[in-house]
Each structure stands twice: as C-alpha cells, then as structure tokens.
Image 1 (cartoon, rainbow, N blue to C red):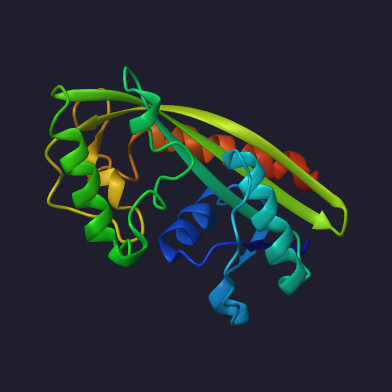
Image 2 (cartoon, rainbow, N blue to C red):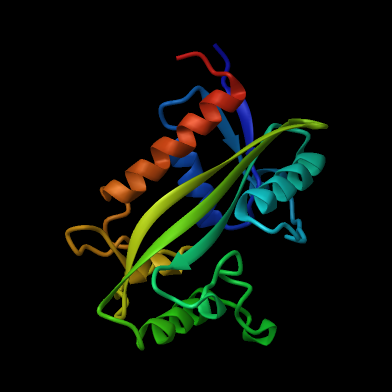
Length: 203
C-alpha cells in the first residue's frame, strides 16, 4: 500500500526532522521544503498559535499542492505579568536587528529567566494545522507543560534552542534527552494522532 504524502510547512529543518519522526508509526511519506526547493516567508498575522498554523498550512499548500502540516507555538510563563509574557511572539519578541539566531534567542531567554526562581513553570500552546485541499483545513491546539531553568545546557539542538533551558521531572535537560523525554514522547503522540485523524489513515 502506498504511503500518503504530507508536506511539512516549515523552513526550520530541526522542526521538519522532528515532525518526520512523529510519523514513524504512520503510513505517511513526508516531503520537506528542501525536497521541493521551496523558500517561503509567511506573515503570521493570527492572534493564536492555531490561527498562525492555519495561515502557514494554507500558504505552504498553495506552493506544494500537497496535504500540508504546519505548526506555531506560544509560550506562557506562570506567575509572570502579561507584559513580560512571550505569548505567540516567542521569537518575534526580539528586536528585528538581532537576527534572532539560535544563540541570540537562547541568550535572550536565559537573561529573562535570570531574575526568576530556580525553576519557572511554563505552558507551551502548540497550534497544528493541516490543509488538505483548497478550502479544506483542520486544526487543533495542544497544551504542553514544561519547566524552565536559569542555566542552559551546554548542548543545543539547532533550530530548537529553548530545549536547552527546559528540564523534565527528573531535572534532565530536554536538549540532552530529546529521544527519551516523556514530554517529547507525549508531543509526538499528540502530533501523530492529529495527522492520523486528519488524513483519515487506517490503523
């Protein structure tokens, strides 16, 4: 039986590799922007991660003409005034001139957390969307609890620098336990379930 094609609507190769790994148990063949030579900038004008994911899924579908998965994330620290919340501007809260490289993003949040307690509870709000055809899209939101610490790990995953500031219940950095972390496993299971339901894949 042939596998269903799914275009990954992101230019972040680390994210693309992660979402590809979510499909290990599904009859899905992923296609990346690199595979098709796609270089697209999308204006994320939505007011939530789910809305932005929908905007990106539709935009990438228009250039790929394949069922397209896209994602957007929001970050919310507990016991933090709204003024200082990253919210849906996790990366875009940095000054445009900074370039927002992995190193700059990591340094920005490490300095932000330096004024907080040893651990800061946080919630990631992850928006997922799949555009199947013109006018036909599905979307969902996933809430994922996490803990941030002041001192980053010496290991950084390219394209996912904030994993270096997050730890699991045992205190292990997510950047060092990406393949074994329960938090990551839950996210992968949730992504796989959404894709399976959206594409109506058989068990």
